[in-house]
Amino acid sequence: MIFLMMIMSFLMILIANIFMLISIFISKKSFLDREKCSPFECGFDPKSLARIPFSLHFFLITMIFLIFDVEIALIFPIIPSFNLVNFIIWFKISFFFIIVLLLGLYHEWNQNMLNWH
Image (cartoon, rainbow, N blue to C red; front, top):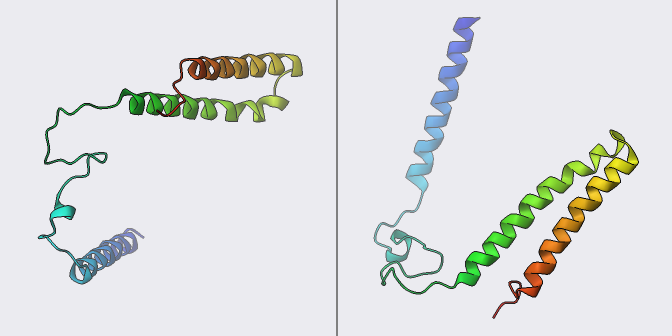
């Protein structure tokens, strides 16, 4: 049994290495291409000055996205928990959570953080 497992492991490693060698040989690489060799830095030219002004709005949009993304991940378990607890308790917790989300969205709207200028 152990001998069979060793043979199978060896065959899996051999097949993986053969596929990697084949991909190396048939791949089309160009080390002379300037664009492919340069790093992509969020649309900024990496050869220019690194201390250029950065719009704070990009950062705020990112934070809003992360906050709402986490909130969606927190909303998903609310639905399956409907059958596990009392309806009144479930409704109060869900309602409170949704109200907090809507108040946060209203505050962001009032601060003009959602407007793209």
